[in-house]
Figure (cartoon, rainbow, N blue to C red):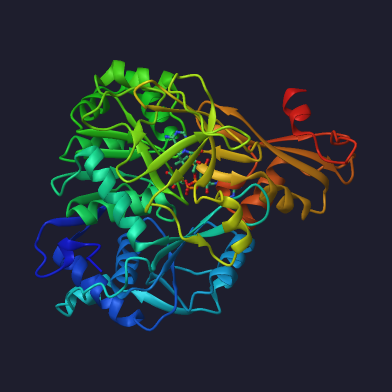
Length: 486
Ligand code: MCA
Ligand code: AMP
């Protein structure tokens, strides 16, 4: 197939590819380090990547892609239950990690391969091998939550990764001259595909902050970075900081492009940032399963509250509940967004039932997102079909997964999980608990730690409300609306 990373082929140059804190890799360094990793995993079936915010993660994933071996990024904060599920479902042969990283017991059955950047550079390194895989072959398996049950592994092809990044390049006039700054986790599409593979496909640079701070954003945008990617929580924190931070305002004003995604950026935050910096954040809309579907274009009109227009190659329609397409572009007629195109995932790993259910008979993917279209085609997302999916800090979190974890706590008799509006996180997770012993209910802290330890810290309830019983209908189904409206 055509190379995913043309800048690594031939004799890559001294342009900086990656910077994490004070660790910098040029394209030549990356070709050596990723080439050396690729050479060691060529025979592996699938590799897991311990996706810390470090250059080893980028080297491991690029190495896997060069070797034609699918990579499964793992959240290093995943608890044992979540990690156990991902490892048994995706069945990697090997886990790639930085030397010195402690790996949990759930990974003990895998061969471990340390990503040794300094060693590869010290040996003069190998060079990047030619990508040997076909366009339709899997590049990544990324785990994503559904309404019930454990997360599903979305299989993303090399073609899907390439076309989504090239469509964004078109929409954003994104080139090798761009320097991206971000602080997103590297085990999801946003941080990994857009935030690392994106700059590398363009031959540009990425600077990762390790963790999000407004100081880090100001420093990098003030020192040559041209683009910022973030989730709405990050832009909210920027909007909050701007009035007292003229350096941050100057840095944002000088950026070429400020992009938000993974959840809706409230218009209030859009407006506060525009007022303080003169710059408008643009939004793009995607999903793990679809990669990117729409964006406000760099050469288009920025419009707060919209996610822009379909990207090149993406077909998008709105449909009513009965499947009838919505024909109007009137800013009012609501339908579910369905998409079709080469950007879509191949399947949910080991889940033909879920894969089949995700598509209509004529091949459109049902996103579950509800939207309207303005007369000029701009898409406005107005809601979500499933109330059991929560978006908190830009992470998609299934209520069922947390309920199951809570029910495993001995102090919990019944549990229901909902999301409620939160200015910082978009939505916060609320656990409604019927305690086993009403005289000695578990504390909110204990339940949060229980969920954080089994699943992941971002899935922990932020609020716990105790009840004598859960409201149920005649069929025994929990009526979540009665909880949230009560
Ligand atoms: C707190 N912590 C705990 C506990 N409580 N650890 C263990 N047990 C506990 N009980 C720790 C956390 O691990 C974390 O550690 C720290 O306390 C703060 O946690 P938290 O409050 O969750 O962090 P935050 O500061 O509120 O995080 C906000 C955030 C984060 C930085 C915006 O939500 C984030 O990174 N979101 C990005 C999500 C994302 O990338 N989504 C993309 C998926 P420490 O500070 O050490 O970490 S969507 C996607 O990919 C599609 C395609 C799309 O459209 O983009
Ligand atoms: P995930 O499953 O984590 O990949 O999240 C995908 C979901 O994030 C989509 O189905 C949308 O609900 C939401 N999303 C992503 N980008 C945006 C955006 N710009 N505005 C509103 N929602 C978004």
